[in-house]
Image (tube, one colour):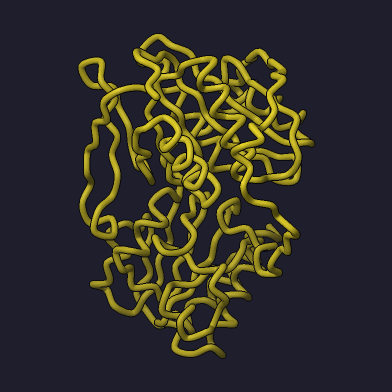
Length: 329
């Protein structure tokens, strides 16, 4: 099914514990930029049971309109059905979502419904000669690829750090519209018996403002405790590179990089992280990157805002002392 010449941008904003997901709000920011470039509107879709605060956040966070739908907790087929009906009603040119697991699953189902494709992991998008050009990473982020998709609607997920949330001082006043939409019964093929939250997931790397990541350069699992100590001093959360996850120094949910969590904190600290392409791809949305490594040729220094060359196990205690002094000043 095609909607012909669509207009406006529709953004699915996922809600967790009553609050909009950070990556989804970034997608809303990107959607706003693209819509404004064509003189169109950006509309958010918020689905769930505890969504009033999230809808208000979207209305202030750049959305011209916010469509809300009362529904039980996340169920992929139900949410895809609801969003599909809204797409048929409003005929947007572009539908965006966060590039997390739910967002990617949702966009794939919707693309199938409308007989098109979903572009994953946008790291950029622009309007060129009236056409939408979407940029995605290839080969572990070593190459950027420009994609142009024909027809409407277009579907894409936005990688964390790509879009910018609307600052509080630029708050908008979008209209909140309640939609009476129910899932299409014939599309509900899966029943969720129960959900169990993994303990490690209480540490939300994707939402954290400060992330401290340790790499194999820490030397051992015992030394990795310094990464936790530094994170405690900074009030941040701990992540690990793929090698330390494979060595079981940290659990898999704390893996940072293309095959783990994509992060975009205000402050990222890499401790003994050399900077493999797959890892760097997952941290480029960070506002400020501090790298500590004994190898001055380590690739992470190419993207770092500040670098310290030396023994990470000596430098971390010194940094902790300085950060503690700064807090007390």
